[in-house]
Image (cartoon, rainbow, N blue to C red; front, side, top):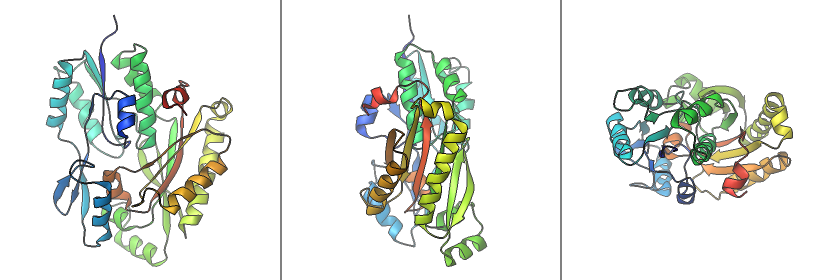
Length: 306
């Protein structure tokens, strides 16, 4: 008899209520963010619109805080009263210590063999793909360990390029030096960052967001063709997007979606989501991202009814 397995996630993929229901998420453990010294949770005690109003004030100070491991373990204990095992998928270990902290806790005696925390090194729409894969595997009767092993085995089946409109937040997070940020701001430089293997690294620098959009699309196409030629032929590579625009229907967002869809007419489109607010604390407003995920299980069209 298959074990009863719960799926628990964080809010790194910014799931909608409909997606939460489709994925049968047992519990979402949110990552908080700090605004002017006060702790908030997205859509709990601060809305998307309120957050961007705060950011419009140059005096606003924002940062993030990982979930308390004691709170996480409390969620696990409650879940295991009803389920035999649980799979807990959260933000990449390359972007937060929360993943490694949870992995270590999962090996404590009371959780060993019952709690599985894959280090699949994903964020945003890439983690959304992992959530769908996990739900499918649970429905197929796979064990928590098998699901963890699969997600870690396929952790490199995705990539993302993200262009930020301001260097202010990268400077605050230590990604660029104050001097480099000052020069970059003066010259209106737009850095393009990349996430592969869970780490956020510099990719290129351009002089406008328009140039950044073109370069990100080119980089995404090149990477897919070089790394996943067979999966590309099989229609298993999906394009994903994200943004940190105050207006979710801003012309910049709609124009970029149209540009990406035109550039990848041969590939299925997965999603375009607002970045979670705790991520926006690091990118700042006005960021645009594009990348890909490989659907090795061939499940996304069916599960998302694309």
